Every structure is written in structure tokens, then in C-alpha cells.
Length: 451
Image (cartoon, rainbow, N blue to C red; front, side):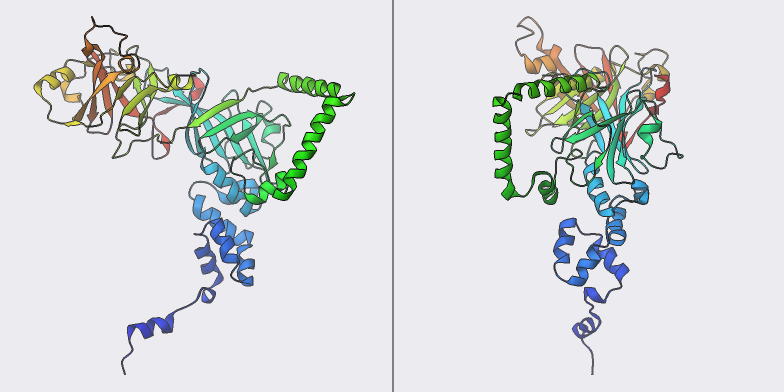
């Protein structure tokens, strides 16, 4: 008598409870915390399994971030891995590039990356050494102490390096007295505020919204009480407000509070700083010009540029230092409303436009900063694009009727190696741009000690 395939499958079929515990934990480590909570409701035995901090939650942390940081070194290995999971989930959104907002600065870029048992933030600025190097300076250290407190230390000087001898963040603020304790407040996913922590101490990783704007339900109740208690809390605050206004000592109390606030601000070592996340810092096959770039301008200084695609198909390039200033969104270096490229070979007229222009090079790569590249060294053009200058976009009538409209016209040349250059018909040079980062790492980093 022959056995069918269905009978064989039914014979060897196993339920989840038939698997060894290590296999069960491995399977569960792929789930989200919400999935874990739902799964725990199916059986009393699974409740115990899902509450196993050292096994399940360590496995979840290890699977998600084990290739990027040392999970068992966070908090000196003495904290709850469930708390660590939620903390790293908040930190994960920090990883990448952010720019200063609302203030003029010559260091507009901050880069967050995973460390051994911390997240490190570094200021990034163009080098002044005449090369394509970017200068990377330590700025912010974020981690958890062995007591489960989130601590953030800011380095105002930008000189501290955490070497292999530093094993935890417990005593970092004591050993390095120049460091400033700060809070990193998330105002949504793409905006953070770094401000001095007046208390000088860390705060609990559970029940605090200082490191993230996404407060979980149980944390919300810890902070504000249950939803039913909110009306009572509100009435209490209203009563307290009017009591201070009408009681004999009310005005004095308010004055004392304002005086203490002024004194606290006077002791500040660091003013609050706002940062906005650069969501698309790298080019993609569909958007080859997108992202953060660096290139030498006509004054031979290295500058950072941000190229973005808008929702209607346009491309805009802006200097990063300009983006940090208030009301600077209307000053692109170049802009185009059409992303259609003209493939090589180019017409003889377009070839002449490209060949007749100089490529601005770093001093380390040419005897003269604006020397024309030899024909053998010229980049292979993949395609070409038309674009306009910024004032042609913002104030169309600024040039007047006597100026040739071709003065505002320019070209973008995309090269075969993935880089690109741009230039205007009014100028005799081309600005060639390179990527600032690749695969999550900053390219061509210089030693910050010489800056």
C-alpha cells in the first residue's frame, strides 16, 4: 500500500510546542514587540517564555542590531534587554545625517553612527587642506548606564575619542569634566533638539520621553496618569494657577521661579540646537543625483551640497550652509523641473560646451586649482541635462530684458563612475561633485586635530 505525500506531511507535522526552546526563541526573535504581546496571550507557558529577558529579548536585540554594536556591553551588561530593545529602537532613527536648522554655521552637518556600547554623533565639515577630505569631529555620546539611566554627553571642544579602555558610560561625565550632560528630544521622527540637562544626571530609559517623541501607552500612563485621571489633573493645575494669581504670596512665588530660571540659564554651558534629518543622503538608481555631495567652488574652497528631488519631478541643489540659515529654502544653486536626460553621444555643440570648460580640482590633484584636465583624464559622460540658476527660478525679472537669458542656463553632466558635474553657460568652469558617504560610512575622512 503506497503512502501519499499528504500523509507523509501529516505524519511529520510539528506544532510550535514540539520545537526545542532554543528553536522557539530563534523564531520569536523575528517578531515585533506587538507580535510578542499577542503571542503571549495564547498560552500561560508562552507568557513565561515571552517574559524571559535574558533569552528572548537578548535574541531580539542581537538579531536586529548585533551586527552594528555589542549588545551585551550596553549598560555594562547589567540592564534589562527589553528596556535596551526599546532604547535602541529609538536610537535607530538617529543613525545617519542631520543638518543644523535656523542658525548660520560653518559646521552644518552631524553624522550619527553605532559604537561599541553607545551611539556617537560627529560634526562633519569640509576640510580646508585643499583636498576632498571631510573633517569628522566628536560631538555627542549617547548610551545607558549600568543602572538603566539614559545619558547623553556633548563634547563642545570636539576632541574626545572613546578608546578601547573605556568600557562603559557610567563615569564618563566625571572623568571628562569638559563634557556637557544634554537631553536629546525627538520632535517627531525628523527633528531633534539637543539642549543642556540642568540636573547633570541621566534619566530612566523607561518612562521618559526625553530621548524620543514616541511614548508607549504604559509610559504615557506612568507620566500623566491613566486617561480617567486627566480631568482631575487638569482641574488641579487650573486651581493651582488661580491660587498663585490671587494668594498673597503668589506673585512672589512667580518672581522667585522666574529668577531661578534666569539663574539656570546663566549657568548654561550650551545653548539648545535644532537638527533636521536628511532623509535621502545617498543617490539611488532612480535618482542618481540625489543626496549629499562635495565639490570645489570657483574660489577653490570645498563645500557640501544637498541635491533633492521634489514631488513634481524637479531637482534642486543647495549649499548645505545656506540651508541652515532661516528662510533659506528659496536659494538653490541650480534647479530644473524636468529630470529627462540626454544620453551620450552628445551633439557637437554640446561636446564643445563641455570641452571648453575647466574642471575645478583640489590643490592636491593639480598644480593649478583651475587647470584643464588632460583629455586622457577626462571623465566619461553618461548623459547630460539642462538646468537653470537660482535667481532665474526665484526672481525671473531680476535680470531684466537687456540680459541674455542664456546667462541663467546651465548643464549637468552625469559621469559613468556615478558622480556628476555642473556648470553655467556664463562661466568657464565645471564644478565636479563626489559623494560624501557610501554604505553608511563617510568617505575621505581627515584628521580633525589639524583643523
